[in-house]
Length: 277
Image 1: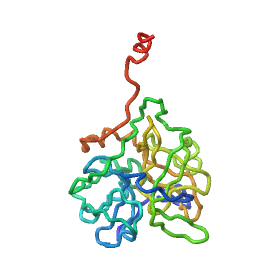
Image 2: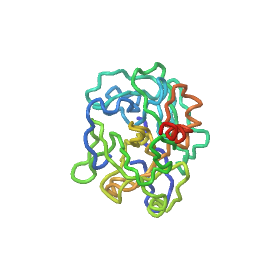
Image 3: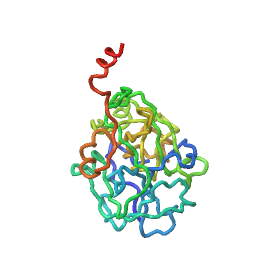
Image 4: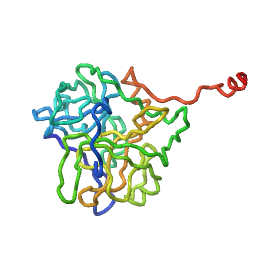
């Protein structure tokens, strides 16, 4: 059985680990590019799912490096556009190649990002990526923005812990690096982003590699992916650390020819407006 997370960084006596708490059921058809990473040896989709990801090109899935760095392509299947793990009628797509970021640091979970090449293309719509630039001037840091986290991870850690079959979503604010540094005792890298609340809402076990999305230029775009956080069972939800999408556009575009990214305001637009007046 594939594991849900790799070895996390060690900030002290309670090591953080990848950890949707406080979420709600997603609506059918809302997130067509959402993918479930599956243990290829397990026929039951519900039990096979162990990490999340997103379709970024017809043959490419983006996920966390710690979800796949221990695996061979034949160990993993991918389900694209799945919402209910117990009622999915689409195909399980085989993986033909795994590309882990060359500077991935498993000890500190820095550059925690990877690509999976599908053996056959998916017909689903890929998700665009936030490049750090946008027409509506979203700050590249995303500080203060409200993001949406998606996943099938552990849902409730108090009365009755369980893993939901239906994809969950929860809104999380992006907070300053200083907040996460104080919380974990580990300085964040520039390629990481911190989001969440002091308690109650968070990613949890099984959500690793899943997307943090934000509304940019009137569409949903991928802004980050679940990397690590505190043990959500013990903490009951906390701030989480996510791999920042915009830091890896060059890496991803090397492999994904049909990649879509956000762009900035067209140059010369103010002059054009003046001429129009």
